[in-house]
Amino acid sequence: MDINEVEDTLTLLHTNDIHSHFENMGAIAAIIAERKQRLGAEQLLVLDIGDHMDRMSIETEGSAGGANIDIINMTGYDAITIGNNEGLTYTPELLHQAYAGISCPIICSNVEEMETGVPPVWMETHRIIQKGTWKIGLIGATAQYSDYYELLGWNVSDPIASLAPWVAKLRSEVDLLVVLSHLGLPTDQKLAEQLPDIDVILGGHSHHVLDRPLWIGSTVLGAAGKFGQYIGEMVWKKDTQGARAHLLDGGLIPITEHMERDASIENAIVIHRQRAEERMNRTVAMLEAPLEIQYEQESPFGNLLAQAVRQFTGAELSIVNAGQLLADLPAGEVTEGLLHRLCPSPVNPCITLLKGKNIKLALEQSLLPEFTHKTIMGFGFRGKVLGCLCVDGIDISYDLSRPAYDRITAIRLGDQELKDEQEYSVGCLDMFTFGIGYMSLSESHEVKYILPEFIRDLLRMQLQTPGAALASAEKRWFMV
Image 1 (cartoon, rainbow, N blue to C red):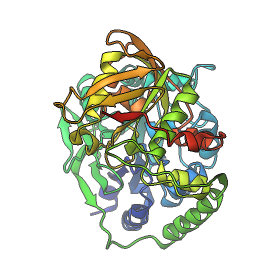
Image 2: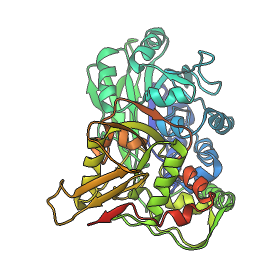
Image 3: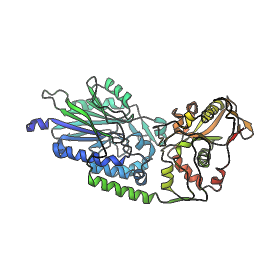
Image 4: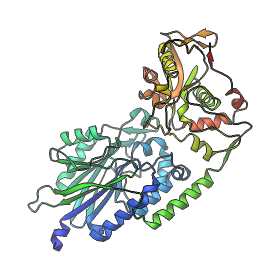
């Protein structure tokens, strides 16, 4: 291949939804370094499509995202966008601190600060990057979740409407127009259909795997699954007649445990982990006796979480699932790191209005193993199984000899029985409002989300409340 043919070719590497799986970052960096050495930096474009951070990871939690930024810089990404794990699990102030040290642009075209009407200072609506003879236009968008973002002071607009003017502006100025889309495959397909001047949409959010590029009209879609299990790769060639670039080849590079890893990245990860563990070793409380968690019936640790949510939200009653807690809380010193290990989910509390019949249905389901043992993925949940429902503010009488869905004989709020058609304020978990796990808990006409506190923050507050640990041993479920 002569020099002109090389300059007419651009290799695009992309990752998405790594979710702080640091165990794969060294291998990803090694592949990027190999391509850069073989092809030349001017023929390679490296992009990440959001959710690089996940606060389940001790490295991310203990560094407020700084560990991820350090690895992004060392790996040599040319641009990234944000996902909901960055945008919703950190306050704008913490994101500003984290991104202050990033060495590549953060591209997102559908986010503005409500106060200023412009993007955060660390975010760009678009960027034209020069790579050799190539001019590449980058635009991006992240999933809306408007109710949440408004609480954080952001306006996240419709992605197609936000991207359309940038597509029109940049199309004639660039050789390749790329969308960094943390929107999910269905929205990516709509983007391709409605904005056909886009050359390539690199996707994330729905964790979809596209083994080969997907053509929709004249637009190519690519995606690399989740957790750094793959790197996406595309090779593009300029059209000699000045038309749009041609895709020569594309696919996925699987990441395996036996692959070579970048030693500097691996060393940096070890250092970040050590420093994070030191920071997370701060004492939260001292516990005189252990608090057990069970997934099939009520237990003290689950009750403590229910107490924490009810006290924080001020609701009449609270309902949480035991699966949020991954193991017993041992006696002795309780540190931030221990609470993080036992309750890693970036799940927020909320207040919802629910009818008595919806509450009762969920509690009936909580007596069934197909619910308590159900495996749940996504929507912030980082546990293994759903687990039973733990409550505070109500007492439940039940009879296991009765048929399923008719086992609860009474639910009492104070000295009154819950009425089927009456609405009650319920301190709850945001994941329930999305119809995850116990579906009837999503059947509300009014939900108030509370950010930025996670439920482990509420556990910390509850452990520091006198008498809370003792109160968690008091029964709420009574078998008759």
